[in-house]
Image (cartoon, rainbow, N blue to C red; front, side, top):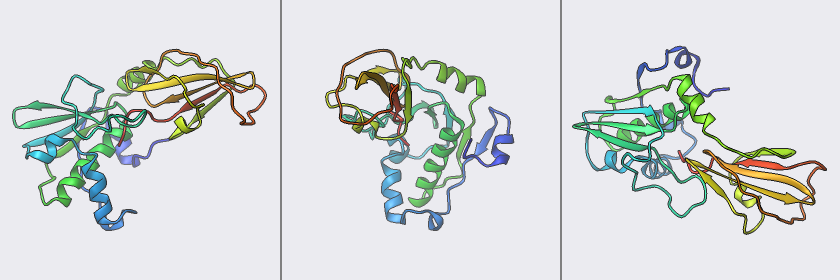
Length: 219
């Protein structure tokens, strides 16, 4: 399922689409809270200076300019989209997912509008489905278990001292509870590591757990 409206899904991949600001008064957050949220999400290059154009594309590129507002020091949910400067134009590179690219376009446009700057130069380009598929295929997770858990903040579910294996944009953990193998994985991609663990949790009789916590990508 996608959160994108049907007309947006109908657009061909690669089409450049305007990103209009949202109606702030209809948002669940108050205007002050929403602006604080946007300020920690929007790339510092956008906050520091104006651009002739800002385009959001699907491209996981850690060699581009990394945002100063990344939440370093956190295990998961800390990476932000990066940016690439082309003269007076800025290309913002988000993880290649249609909803993610669309959402980040709205974040930038809404931030600009709320800070009194023009937002009509913000566009986004939906990634090709093959590009999204290749990004998913980069995941290298050891799913040799009985149970997979997907959600947020699953590092709190993993045993204390859990050893996480990191891949490009994700991390995962494999442990053993009451004789059963389970793994926790956070947004991105993972390779393999195993560590024993004990817990009083009452897991089902054959239940290795993969917990995917939308790891290092944050929106």
